[in-house]
Image (tube, rainbow, N blue to C red; front, side):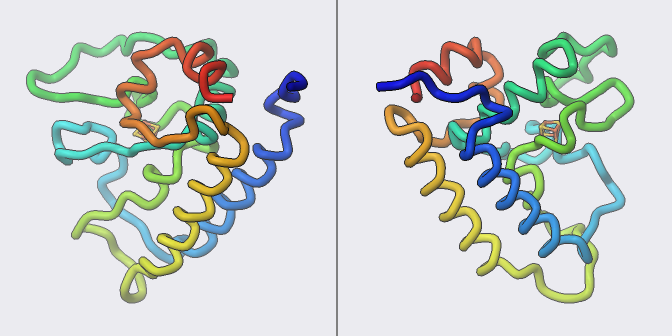
Length: 160
Ligand code: SF4
């Protein structure tokens, strides 16, 4: 089996970004005034579960910002804040954030009507299919906090 291309040149990355762009366009009319709150997994009681192909993009973005570093601010007792949330309350890899972060709805979402869940599910299936094709050995989704706790390079080399 040949070596996988660099992630920036990988056709799977282009497909992933096209799926993300489609999701962003579908959800553009929707929003939330409480940005950042859902990045505390203790607050929401759940967390995004990116597939291997999404983790590859997270790894790429994390490298570009100098790696996944410890937050400078002290954690609030009982919180479980994503390691990629900056001290300013913004996602440090916003353009590369996983699908679940883009579509993570709660009852506080505002918008012109009902969230198009069928469309989101269609894209979610497309994403799973892409991960299965591009990361054949271990394409599965895993909780974001577990993925970030592992050496991401090792995780991905096992997956491809
Ligand atoms: S990747 Fe970014 S948007 Fe997603 S939970 Fe982490 S900080 Fe929040």
